[in-house]
Image (cartoon, rainbow, N blue to C red; front, top):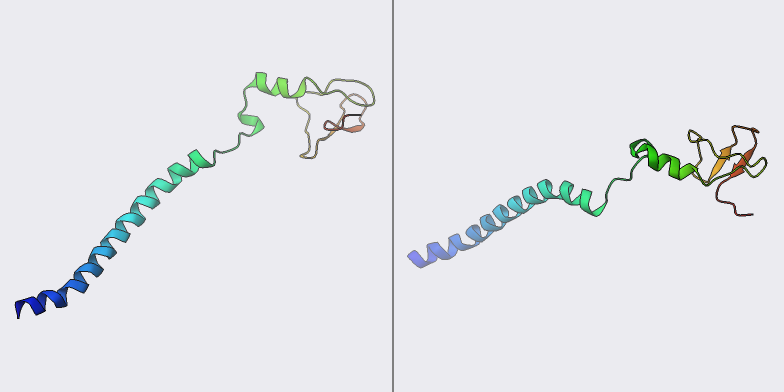
Length: 98
């Protein structure tokens, strides 16, 4: 008789055990995933976060295709590489190697 009650309680015990396991697992993942996200997918640095000497090294090699003027350190460069020369006001592309 006592064994029957234990057998009846066993599936409930297993169910509660797995519920507790998944609650703990979900809590651990909720806490740990943001930390792992920074490790696996580090945030890309914006130009404003770079030190000043890095900004000058980014711009020092580029010259205007039309007049030969150096690229201004405050020049806005599009993602495709187009930039307007501050000296002759003509557009050129820094990725083009003519």
